[in-house]
Image (tube, rainbow, N blue to C red; front, top):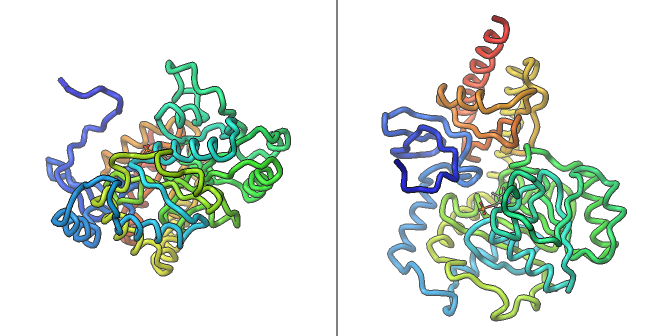
Length: 385
Ligand SMILES: *Cc1c(COP(=O)(O)O)cnc(C)c1O
């Protein structure tokens, strides 16, 4: 019997401890973790620098409220601004809250209400971000949704031409994460940015999953040569502590005056200490170029061992956010991989998503690839029987 609402389909794994790319369960079984708490523990579990930064802050003070000056917020905000196109940061506690702030800011700043998002997108579970999410199954039973969202097909330029100047913002992920690890095509992103210019809409990039070095750049939009008005971040920003951030350009600053928006816990100093340590490490050029190298290594190895497998239709992604698209539902394969001690998760019904810590070693990549090869080989022989 459980005292929890059963909102999650949980695995039969009870964690005892976690370190680096490894999770040990209460039976002392070691799992190679290619989930990273869903793109959260980008520096691996129990990273020493993050741990020490958090411990130091724990001894100073935990929470005082945003009535006080908090220099550590300024330091984290400066790191985010210096590594993005934004000029000011609002801190909150999750991805949904960051997107919620972006939606509110876009509406207040433009005086318009309509927000365009895309099919298969994922933006969160609060009412506005659920309404922004272009997936029927997330909406089920909660309607009527907020009416001011419309969903266009992703990676298709045609619908964009029909948009008019009543649009407050266009909001999108440059690699759709939950929707199936679908990277945006360059021509599509260019057209989205041009459309925002044409109709006077803000460009909001949801970097909750793709940001903080995951794709080999501080933020994934930086692969595309665009300059968004608003960038949202969360997941990897605190390496496991709850934190979200909305980063906006200078003209937006006057719209969020004192009293317009807020959060009791937003900018919590423990989470800030963690984020400061995370960003100081990940936003270093050397670290990011290693992410790109590891990504190329992992993708080439995967292509070698399962590229021609009868079930595999594509291996795609950006940086260390990689999807293996299969012909059928992947839940059984994901369970088999876990039985073989490799943790992965799905992205949509038929994509296996690999999100290792960015600190993963080549040896660990070899081990994961070998488990994937063996697991797919055993499926082959089952099919052959
Ligand atoms: C996970 C995710 C969110 C929601 O973040 P929460 O912290 O769960 O609220 C929003 N957008 C994207 C792209 C995500 O991957």
